[in-house]
Amino acid sequence: MTRILISADMEGATGVTWPADCLPGTPEWERCRPLFTSDVNAAIAGFLDGGADEVLVNEAHMTMRNLLLEQLDDRAEMLTGRHKALSMVEGVQRGDVDGIAFVGYHTGAGDEGVLAHTYLGNSLTGVFVDGVRASEGLLNALVSAEYGTPVVLVTGDDRTCADARGYAPDAETVAVKDYVSRYAAVCRTPARTAADIRAAAARAAPSAVRHDPAEPRPRTVEVEFDAEHLAGAATVVPGVEQTGPRRVAYTAPDMYEGIRCFKAVTTLVSAAVEEWYG
Ligand SMILES: [Zn+2]
Image (cartoon, rainbow, N blue to C red; front, side, top):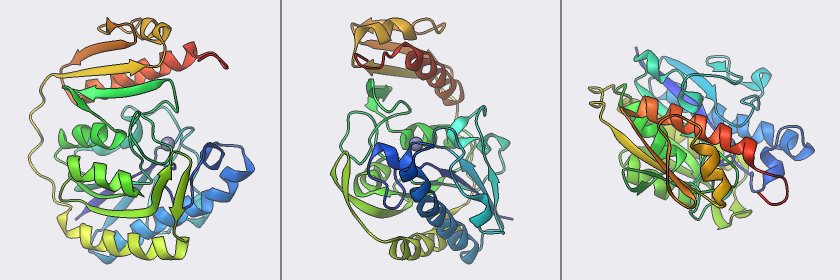
């Protein structure tokens, strides 16, 4: 029995290159939802081609209500909506997920890449785990490792694929577009990217084999903002200390707590961002 979890984010989906494309409620977002669903369907089909038995899709973008259930491959199930203990990788804590796929991912805050950011669309200029700059992919890979679940497939722009080679060197990667600027990319059509994703997921399926859970160990997470008041806002979270004018840090006993504290920090900070001045 091979179980796959797909963590589906939208910034790295086929054809998505600027904020409105993935901002719920806009006409551009409506147009891009089928493109995003197509990427996810291609991954589902590929994993099942490759021998997987079950696929659960966890919506991981903003409101977590973007994919079109009515167009989803019938053989998969979808977890949609917000407020989940592990957010983007909700489900991995069940401990029975043999492989996880990051579909539609993107690079982290402060890096090159289409729509690069880490949780917050702006205001945050870098996240570091034990001194290493971290993307959402790296953060979620560290969480998944604590449950013995390897990352087997990553899709997004070409910079996202390069980033994945750092945290999941054995994963299959598919670049659905090539970075030109934060809001521009050379895109391939959904027919082409679906074929590429399906083939990569089929190749990745046999490597979905759970390993021993990574030994939980304390992790120091540092977060850097673009304005000093945001660092002050973040310190409301117990254990979060200001370490510089625009920087905070905390140490969590493991990545499960590390990612949950990060979520608390970003939620609080987003409430402190003013519309024009940040
Ligand atoms: Zn997103």
